Image (cartoon, rainbow, N blue to C red; front, side, top):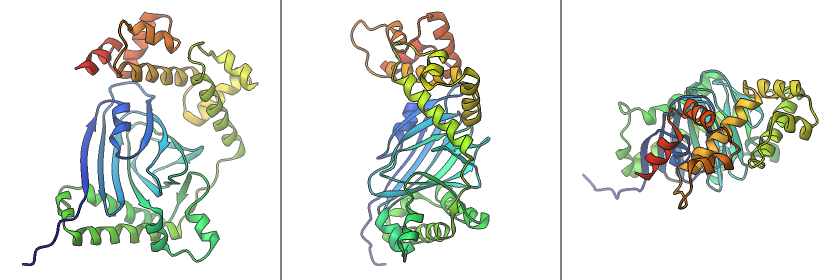
Length: 325
């Protein structure tokens, strides 16, 4: 039998126990994850690279807020496998029957429900353009919209692409070590790109939320940005209402409509994630946990410890101790 030169590829299968660890697990991406719902975090990232393609599957058991960007020069398509409810992708509602798309020069934001499982492809722009062979600027703009977008297509087509991608992560169907053969890489790449091009040719933008929903998402974005840029004060709901010139009731409506939570809980969760992120770093000499808590606006230390434990399933001291070992 003739010998074939091995082709390069990379594969990782990683279990995560922390939202920051999970954000760091995806190769070549720059992301921040904040855990929103309480309890011990459990996640998994299976990540595969070959022939310029990146195909990955990630699962998280807790609701998280994430934002960031992918590696340069690629187009990303993500298809939910399962999710307990709906998500929010760049001010658009994401369901299991839709898919998220964005280009690497666009920073995305995604708030997921608990039990979120997604499979995605990051494909070089030139490779996808060649496969789709767009014959007009209008079609090109459809493939590469100016902002992250939720798209829909015929359910049969979406299921076919979803199943094609899922088969890669099924040990009974495929062993990653087979990718050392260039023939396997060519066949798999052709199948994935072919399915993807067909789906995107037929896809359309999901109906945009009404103006009221988009406006409430914008309020949430502005409130979050303002609160996180003034952690040393700390910011109260009354401060946000004054800054945004809206009533307390309207602020609550905005958070409830966009994120199914209230502003106090959401912003506290983001601050607690900031504390956890700092605790996971090497601490300067003589720095105490209370100093980090104070930096993030927590002054009632017993209450802070209880809220931290309720969200992450461990005390702040346990986080600091575990990260030193």
